Length: 219
Image (cartoon, rainbow, N blue to C red; front, side, top):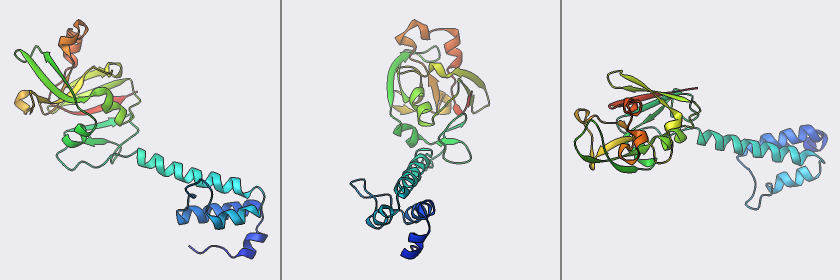
């Protein structure tokens, strides 16, 4: 992009000058120097036009903030087999209004492990997965209820209020090994049943959906 000639800048007036400067700075990708000051050429021109500098700085700041927001509002695309798809009231996606996760992406959210007995497996077993709390934060969920679906379309509702630190996980490993469908995998919503009697209820058991493959966050 070619910068306007100096006479035009002098005769354009403060407001128009500010707009032209903002357009030029943003188009050239110049958001300022490391010390927070504007690019020297812009600083010199704005100094000659009272009131123009504020508009340029604000425009530059807005442009940088918009770019940052856009970067934060996207997830990387899954490279492996998609295990979980989240839609509904979420603020972060990786295409078509949904967030898709493969195993590596779930691991990248942080792994949580606990040992517990369940009513479906013998003895004490050790499960690893991503905390439901961390998963919902990663997609910026803003709802109150999660509709969780299994591969066979079985459906349960899970309150977002259940997603607390040390609460349920989306498990992908049992005793250090990935879970097959026969073992209720590849994903299983599990609560730390042995940690508290509050988790050993029919209501909580009913929310522990296995073969999970998609979730819809509802407001």
